[in-house]
Amino acid sequence: MANSIPEHQNAESQLKFLRARQQLYASATIFLVLQLFLTLLVPLAGAIIAAFRPDTKPYVAAAALTVLLLDILVLDRQQKTLLKRAAKIAEQFDCTVLELPWNEFTVGERVETEEIHSAAKAYAKRHDDKLLRDWYPPEVGTIPLSMARIICQRTNLHYDRRLRVSYGNAILTGASCVVLAIWIYGLANNLSITAWVLTMAPAIPVLAWAGREFYRQRDSAEPLEKLLREARKFWNEALSNGCEESYCLTKSREFQDAIYSRRASSPLVFPLVYRLRRSSLEDEMHEGAADFLRQYAQSKLPPWS
Image 1 (tube, rainbow, N blue to C red):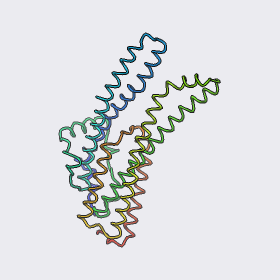
Image 2 (image 1 turned 180 degrees about the horizontal axis):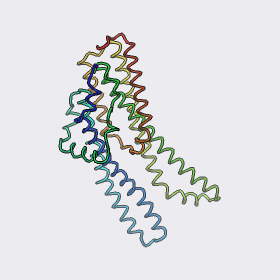
Image 3 (image 1 turned 120 degrees about the vertical axis):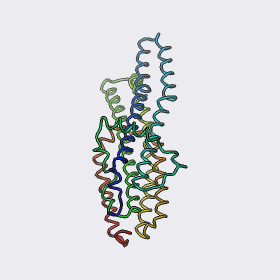
Image 4 (image 1 turned 90 degrees about the vertical axis):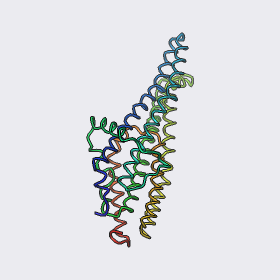
């Protein structure tokens, strides 16, 4: 075997990183759900209540202001803090498995061991490691580490891009269905323009969230396209000229910086979407890795260069 990626990624010390990462994402998801509930459903309920009970308008306004402040000062900040911490733990996993140096300038200090242990323990109480093993395609263990890194990092970028595109499309489809359903309802009941607008009004917060989330996911996916092109260029260069260790290590570290920045700043994707798409995305991952391995086998590079 040319490198130790398959063994390292399934070692207990590395699985602990993945458990902790998943637990922090689960905690961030709780804040996301609470954020959606407070910013979408509470204003909607308040508008309906105020329409039937005008005397409650001051209380509804006070509740709306409280929700706004809670969202800005607590929910959003907590969610971003957890995502950044999860990104650091994922970075610790990658740096160990892919044998990359830690870049403190970009990433900062590592997450404390005690915090990782606590989060990993919480995850292990409810889940096994079935979904965490073989995080990267085990097939990459048959080629030199400098080349295997490129495949793993490209896999990372492709997986995330596809997941975000799927999530954004699902949001857009759902919002379109809501608008279509209201439009059909209006036609079926011969509603006037005023009545149609009033019927649409309660759905506006949901549609506004859907539009904002769609563009956030799209904006997160677009830079990944460029990184994927650069990864392909890097791979082709390595195939043509060989992958001199110090140069390829530096180049892979640059890609890892981009991967970390993307993880730390990109909006969260609902775990349900991840679970629904996991099987097909993993199939794409293995097929992509197999294609790169075929290219390596057909190249002029020596077997273990």
